Image 1 (tube, rainbow, N blue to C red):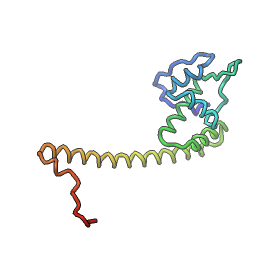
Image 2 (cartoon, rainbow, N blue to C red):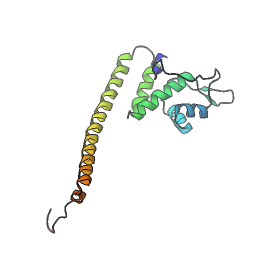
Image 3 (cartoon, helix red, strand yellow):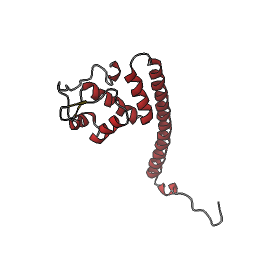
Image 4 (cartoon, one colour):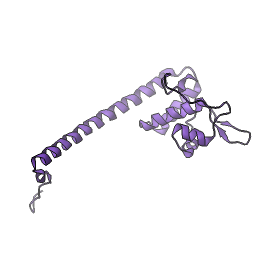
Length: 155
């Protein structure tokens, strides 16, 4: 499964013991809750069945942690659970659907870029308002920043 490499090769990845990690340790390493890990599994976001001990406890391996990181980053950028599930289904299905995976990721990237552009525009407005406040405070006439009082009957 080559699909799960969320980090550039130059970044250090902590080792995972051969026996895998408990769900608590996997949660700690991935930055999500134990509940989230169980939820991801329950709603079909995992691409391979999570390993279990003889006692039935979940054991997570390096590829599991990398895939969870992919899911959490997609989620953090606004991809729906349905979208992540579809992506997971495509990855789990193996070769032959790379174009569909690419389309899905490009579409999501375009949505993220549009949201970033909107946020940048909103940030420019906030910056302008900050400049106005600083200027009025420095000029000593900050009282002019209050909303005008409407006269009765005015709309």
